[in-house]
Image (cartoon, rainbow, N blue to C red; front, side, top):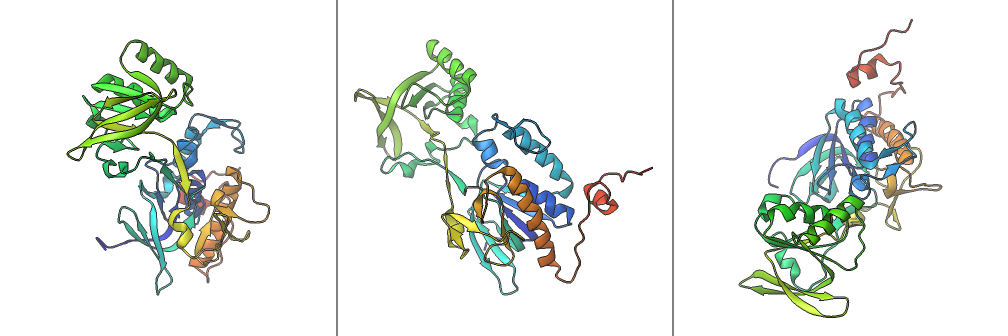
Length: 348
């Protein structure tokens, strides 16, 4: 183990809306949490799949986007100082002799936690990869599924594959700084913001980038470097395109991943829980939001919020079995006002 593990009372897996609200509910009960997510930013599906699409069924908020919901939740949980560990997947979870859980991530971070909350939505999002034999050898060298450092692509010959927001946004961005940009999509229809599509077509008309309809069918390498790809159009005609970097944005697919091996009771890729505590078949591990299943389950954000509240109370009892946990209201409780860092109102 590279360094000593971080010790915590609660570890939340998943930083979507339900994982974020779990921080809040635990915080009210003075339980501090660390949060891990496989994505590079908080917000889960809301940010990855529909950041700008309206959501209408959050109580008391007539309409908000996925991004607004995420930002509001982050603001709401600010008093609790949760620490986020992003861009990494939980790779192992083992119960220790003292009853606590040892958790390890794909970035070799380790945690020892008394309780674990799985709020992993439909699982860890992984980029859909390019299906060409041997291409994996070039990932993060010349083939990229995420852009972490845009500057590294300046003055490069870039090929971008995909037809969604990420593909178009980066194609537009790199048309300014790259030596050349070629966008490849399997059809001449795009699932992206209309203004991005219009901008991309305008740049193509100005010869600042080019659009090819078809797919990448092969690649050529020399001295362990990718030198060109073979593009095949819808009529089956092929041509070589020289490149320095290949950026692939085929979207994300959720995978249950290592969670499947933790010995939890699972039904069709969902974790079975009781509806009093939202505890899994392993005491001290809770599952909230889309990842869980029980009789009458509805996959709604608001259901996840309710589940997070009950799971927090169950965890407080699990952590302090001898202590009576009182239900207090944020409207009237001076104790909760102190925890939230707000002034207690004086009622006339």
